[in-house]
Image (cartoon, rainbow, N blue to C red; front, side, top):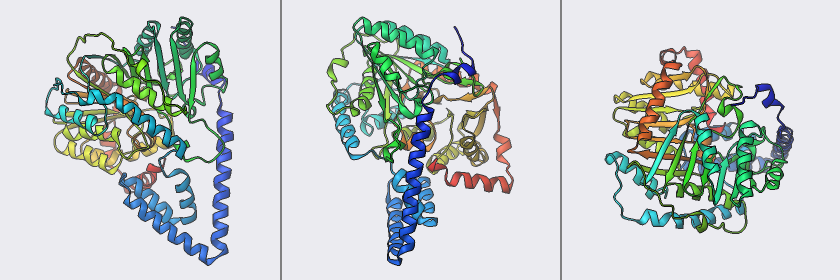
Length: 515
């Protein structure tokens, strides 16, 4: 397979200048609003009093929200200490939510798609859960998050993204009806070009092809000409939530999902985007480690519906659905249970976090987790620490070489409390681990896009796949067993920290929910 150098990756045209322009535009507007608020506040004691009252009322509102406590505390401290600045920043960036028109379209579209989940949710079919714990976890995803559980689905786990890419390209070549692809980041380089050529060839043979990407995730990799290039090759392409130099609270909510669906019969998801470093064709942060899964069978239906959620949000008319849910004859080789699910920042249900919490709290022997960023809620910290002090082998793997140094410092600030409770912390010595996976007791596993940080758990559109009772669970466990020897365990190093370092960590954690 041909490889490219890091210099080649840097030479690829991108839209960073557009990002800088938009960022400067937003920064100027924020500064102007803060200046105006300060001026008005100093102009009149009445306005100053009103600002104080507003700050008090907003802090009460934040305190009463059903959101994570650490998130509340960070905002309350910021607004209380700097009322004018804090209120301005909170109104601009502190609320997860789209502008009214986008939220209305999203909610209507999600309600429509849930009518297609309903027949599966309402069936009374006994599924082969290994035990009561996995049945309860599936119950939560079905009855609270409204994502059906499926059998008759085979799951293939890929701990090597190069293998995943080859399997994905093979599936794309076999497409006869439609191809859906949704990714946070696409880089217009060799890996993507191989995919694009397949998509164009399939489109030329009458296959409907849709590509959907997040503007912020891809802005460093492609230009504004990317959509036109794909359209010229017969590929429908849309950009989610384009970056604009105008203040917009929805800019804080990004599409972090990674989905491929082929003809409604084969689907892929996981942590990897379609950019060079994910397949180790470039090495900006040492060796890149990621993972994904391939689904074949009935559960692909949910991946199709998850794709249509945000695709449909970008148009005024409801999306066509039924033609993309064909009855595909398939007999699975295994007898497991699979639940593809999604999370979004426009409701009050922290589905991604709750799935992790359920697995941690119910673990009897072990729970292993990989995450590129570790910015934990108090609830998640308590769950991890309680599991460890209750005799469960809890291990977390984070990167050895960071992609964002400040976030890496914040990640490390959470080590000490976990390590003192017996949680074993590892750093992936060869480079950057981007995989988001969790396995518990050899019974259940999750692979997807959801990091253990506040942005993934509360602000982004995410997706993952929970599965049990199949070989893929053991394959995820084997992936961890292969990772631990190449990682550096830092548990003892962080279990004993000086007072100065503990103080610095406290400061980093204080405002980490706002990052």
